[in-house]
Image (cartoon, rainbow, N blue to C red; front, side, top):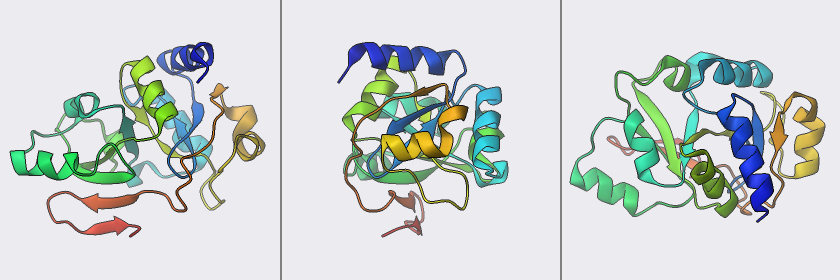
Length: 185
């Protein structure tokens, strides 16, 4: 892992920029989730409606906790059994969690990533990242640095190269309280 590139990418995120980086299955497109202008720019680039909400990835649960309602010990055990890993959970969001992240939902999609470069980027930023597939809506997600450059290169402020985790499909999304699978499986 190139530490200089990682630090430079984290600076871009902290300054409100958009970045692409490898995740478990595809390249992710991300930004600082607390920066409304950056999130709105990301949504416009993807042609993604804000009401759908977004996923946050983190290096550990502590980075996600400020966005989420407190969990029961049983709920934490359930999450801990799947994290870090390619499991995204819909968890009740705090009332103060911005609508630009959760869309029309009262939950927020979150994951503690097992991808070493994505987790290192979250640690370098000091907070979670928005993580949506690096593509425009309706187009296939990018799985390589080259495919990411071809689809979004001119609109990115940084691209952190590296291999994806090799998963064939994007992560499964499951509702924590109901257990219902929303995507995948």
